Image 1: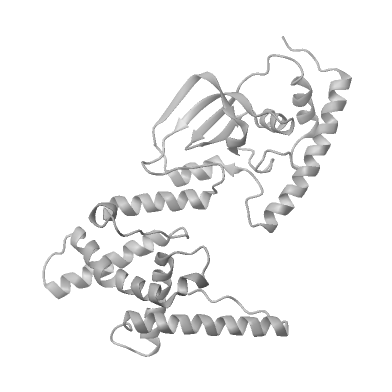
Image 2 (image 1 turned 180 degrees about the vertical axis):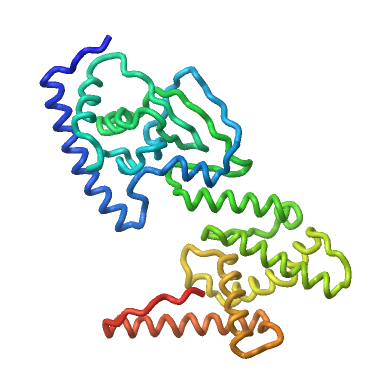
Length: 311
């Protein structure tokens, strides 16, 4: 039975709301300085990335779920910080009413979607915010699970780009079967959209391989030939040069794509019939990057800003 919260309960709740919004202000500043997401993750965007029509399984028996794994919302992701602190978009009166009601029994379960190891609130955003502000560890919820492809995970510390990268990598491996054909080769990229670019490289290699051999080239053969004759020679030069340490957080495959673009620029610039060999390509890429780094330092010392060059 519903009972109107007492005046004292509302006063205590209002004080907690003011403290929570102050923490939210500080949290937003720190997240922006660190380049992290300041708000919740949008469920619709995640579903667009995962793909419509994936099977869902609804559990109608409520269960307790960890509050720190709730990182998104279906419709109110701009109203709260990543830790569900209320922002200026939240109606104080409603938040206070929910917080005051927490002192009475019978709080109804919230409703959430589970994607990987994280949860998105369908109904109950204010209850989650209040519970987290009060230091609770879990909350009762009805859970609807959304299935991810095999090998793809989604954890509370990840953002949408990281999920997208996993999905793109899963699609890349499904198409190329590289993990089966060459399990010793680790293809890893750090920017969304680059796996598709790598697939285009394989397609182009397959086309020219067919012209060279004057026959139909099966996709599996093209993948293996691309790895052996195009990808690995450049990666081996990357390892010899030690250039990877100049790009913290990047991978050999990232550098392969940058150097592949660099080779094409050199070919076009000097009107070459074919791109430079891997050794020359990596060497000139290193020299160009070092030179641009010196220019940036000089410009910074002079107070002149210069755009980063995307290699």
